[in-house]
Image 1 (cartoon, helix red, strand yellow):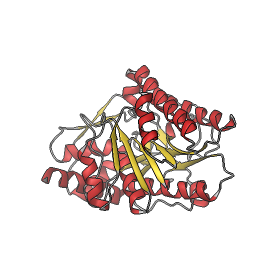
Image 2 (image 1 turned 45 degrees about the vertical axis):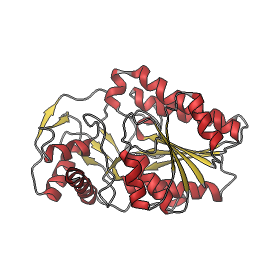
Image 3 (image 1 turned 180 degrees about the vertical axis):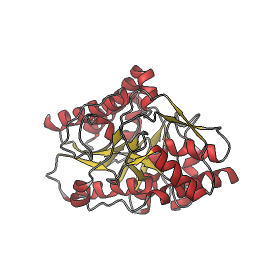
Image 4 (image 1 turned 135 degrees about the horizontal axis):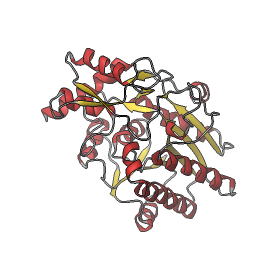
Length: 336
């Protein structure tokens, strides 16, 4: 398939690009480099020994999206183009609504115009209501508690409406839990511009001395050690879920829309991750407890049984392997 990977130079997108290219798909990447780096193009090519097209494009602008669709035969879209920091979304909600929603509308307009019928959307576990009992199933009640999660929820609703409208578009929605880790080559990993919002790159920078201390947001949650519990999944496992989802939709043309949790089914606290990282790096992660962060919930982890059964997808990496790959990436990045 010829796949447009929107947001394809970001942390998750770049790993998906590698998986797609290594499994015989052709890839067109569009990314505005707002939270990614142009050097990732060379890293993907080095890992895969494959060529692909790249567009430096902000997909909020319909003319940019039109150009990509007009110049390429696209069979499907994987949509990861969006802002993704919970805390920032609480501070700048309009920026999140504008970027995440308009980008999606533009992609869907061009899909209709150019006859592209398949979209795979990167949604989030934050679409679920905080009061649900863990682990979460796809049937649990939705009700996001922060603007980032609400943008994901609204896009899911947008896709439902588009499918129900009688258009030819089919959609598959993957609700990610917490991706961590890095490619085994050490060439790709979570390397955000500026101060990281995600746990693992922050820990990595503390260990390597680039940041002084890890801030742990709250130790008074109703969890075993008081810190937030999340379902951490290796980014390579997450990328593999996209391959399985594409295969599923290609083999089941009657499926118009479907939803899957992509997680391991295991919850780890922030301090569990700190302990695991200490084991693999042989060091000591310096941390301090600070106030809770706006928009966070106490626990969030998946029941991935549906993806296990229907997509034949299973997470393979354990938590120490995830931390080790992150540490390997940080060290190799510093050695360049």
